[in-house]
Amino acid sequence: MTPGQLGEVLGLPPIPSGTWAEEALYVSPAALRRGEAPGEMAARLRVLPGIADVRVRGDGFLEIVVAVPGGLVTEIGPVPAVAGGAPPWADLPRTWDNPGFVVRLAHVRAVAVQRWAAELGVGGDFRPELLAGRWDRAVLRSLAEVHGRRVSRAPGWAAYTEQLARVYHDAFERAPALPSGEEEPSALHAARVRLARAVRDVLVEGLAALGETAPDRL
Image (cartoon, rainbow, N blue to C red; front, side):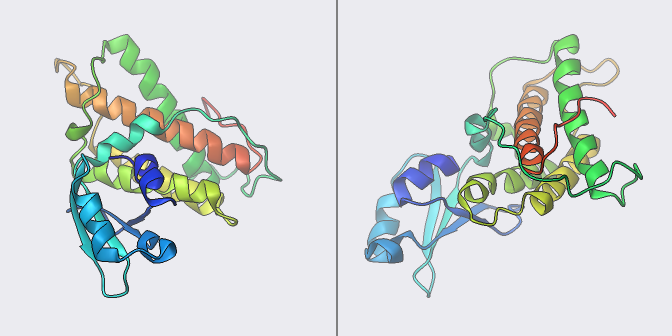
């Protein structure tokens, strides 16, 4: 169950919540907005494929746990770039203290992963259930926000792209998408390459909204 699919069922994008370290959790006020008893909506949601659990909070909000959070990358792809205003960041210094550098380097790394994966023969069917490690789930948690940001009056692209970039850097360094040494390409590598592609596409979108063209190299 992806955020887009959940949004269609609920009538509005679900809101990712928590760290996703233990469970991929969304919250939604959909029952209250539609005037439906929260318990009844929760019962309908529990039987849908891909839903692990639905809980009703005291305030009537629903807590929806998705069984395979990695599925969300399948609905992230290139979107038409909508140019924004002046970029909020300077090019220099190219250090971790400059959010612009952090975001641009994340895009460069995500692009490079696609190129290197092709050269190393990483491929095969995408298995979203393999994106279950700590670093992968942190990236998924950040990607899950993109639907809500797109429809928000104040999407906050600068803060969001920096947040996504920082968790992607952690994943890039600690949960490699590419085999090293004599290691054979695996289905996990392929899943992480697909995750990197989703990061690339969202960063392109966010940078365009901020008035920048995402760089392939620095």
